[in-house]
Length: 577
Image 1: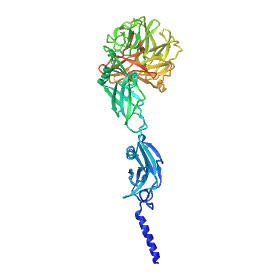
Image 2 (image 1 turned 60 degrees about the vertical axis):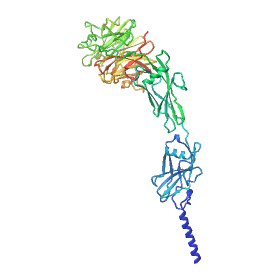
Image 3 (image 1 turned 90 degrees about the horizontal axis):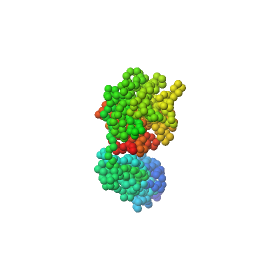
Image 4 (image 1 turned 180 degrees about the vertical axis):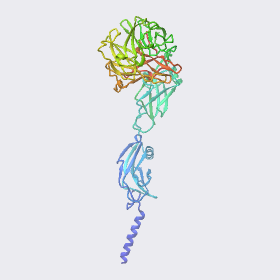
């Protein structure tokens, strides 16, 4: 019995000794009933990550059994036993079985353990109970590197490629902007603007400007002027440049994949808008006569004003400077093709054979407006009225105004309409009557929110330029366009939507200086191949419509004025030899 009792005591003492020494596992414990994590879920064994491509990294494991306070994700150098871990990150409670480490936390682990740019690690998950911790029996290896991914700027925004900085028109600064560099990395690059001569390769740029981490930079007018003064050829008024952006992360740099051209000029102002303010010249149209001069005809805005009475005729040699040289009609032969005593609107001048043929509009009661036609041997007249051509009642469409003649292959097509759909009919060879009037039906090509048609053919496309919106001062009046491969439509926007459902593309709209720009003339192509339009707009100071001039550029197959808004001043001028 004594022997048996002794053996029991020895066994009990042995068990007590084991309990006192238990914690377990790699940190000195021997297992037992302590809560430990036995399964790691992710990241996978042997994961290799590059810090520069990470925002964060999440660790998962299966829950431990037993009572404890929290988990702790621990890291050690490869071969370590976690007795003195290189880093540890604790959860908020014992229920969470995942932990997301931020880029900065992972970077701290990397910097504490890396050798020659590589951090070879093992990681595991401990359970923490008071002052004790219990490391599970499993661990996984992973490798962290910190090589920098390429950071490439793919797009340059402003100034656009082919842009120009006219010093005489430049405000306080010239803004450059570009896209943020694309990369798999998570660092924020710094940017440098580089400027070189056209033909240069930026190996020795004319100038560089640091932008920090911003994707834009403004050069003052003085800085742009200094570029010109220091690098333009003697006597030249232009300095052709190229510009790009360099991105940098740590000691690594990359050039943008794009390069934009930019020309700095000291050209003088050629003209300022409005061109003419002595009296109102709404709805202008223009023609170049055999004598080389341009002749402009405008709405008879105020019959009580001697300058506007009977439809003013203006003359210019350059489209910029205009002088009144007469009127289309006199008090004695002023047309009256509607009821009442109405003025003449929107004259449209054309050359048919050896005659100058002008289509004019006149309002009538209850929107029963009409279009007439007058003929002269000279652009200054005298014009002989041939009476009514388009009648609202006959055509079944009110507000029959704003005629425009499109000529092709010896045939004459008259477009007209104002906020009642745009219609077209073919005229006779002399343009003085509707061809086959008894049988020909008008065709509609654009919906009921347009007026003041101009038709242009270019590169196989017909372009229908019209005005739309509120035409009052401060209104939304603007020039828009659609195009078709047939003269009779359908005319569509860039997405293929039909103008009959009032879809279009913007050509020009108002700004803080000029409101309600629209009702343009036909396009005038100068001797350098540049297209121009005359149109009307309101200024803040005047309560009547003034004459304006702007370029029309062709961008991706569509007509658009610079900035899609009226120009206050321009160094470009129409060129006529």
